[in-house]
Length: 335
Image (cartoon, rainbow, N blue to C red; front, side, top):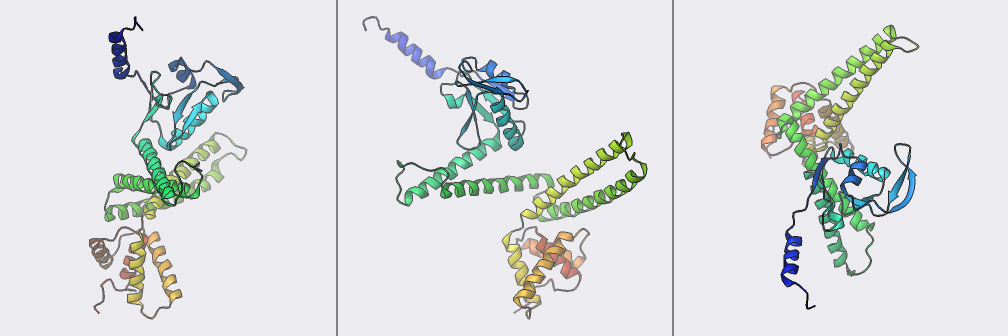
């Protein structure tokens, strides 16, 4: 130890602790497995076995591979092109063309690859928080944290699912607010317009089918291909529109049902339970089928309910239709 240079040792320690990790930023859509191997030159040296790859050729699977993050607390080992493409496809499908940070100089193995995306990080935090809460609940039941924990335990699975569902709903609501507006009127107008657009596309498709039967080659050809392409385009647009309509309806809250129940009882005090259920379904159906502007009385009723804090729903729209038809009163009866 006589030759030990303490000054040099402390200097090296300082450099290690304060070194800036060199990272490579790349969009996931552009990233390839070859780029991963080129970036992490110290890894991908120890071949474990070989297997057929997505390009149809035999390729090596490496023991000393880099692990890529998942939206829970796990990582996926990317040992070959097949493993990489599988992870890439799932991540693109769920989060789109996110940016990645490749950090070959990271001091710990689980920091080698990072995803720089707000939604991904939010989902990951949500999972970890839900897991932590579930473990706390598990511990409160009298189990020791030191005991082996089954991550497929129903308590943990349910907690994870609930947390993810809540976050998805919040994210979806924010997306709808951004796309169509945050207040009730905006969403109602959007739903009416989308329904009309859906009907227009349905009519357009029906006419195209008639035209295709008359003009397209029975054995197939350029004209038939053109009609097929146009029909596929319409079907894709209809699918997207229907999804938005379904999403807009998804946020109907329980208060709307309760208010509709009260509305039915108040206007039809003699109704039996079965009649109330039937009326509830009819009102919901009327609201879902609403594709035109409400009358003045219906608008006034809807405005009062909105002022009272009720949110957009098929039930509210259906009640407004009933008011327009004169089948029910839009004014609360005095006791």
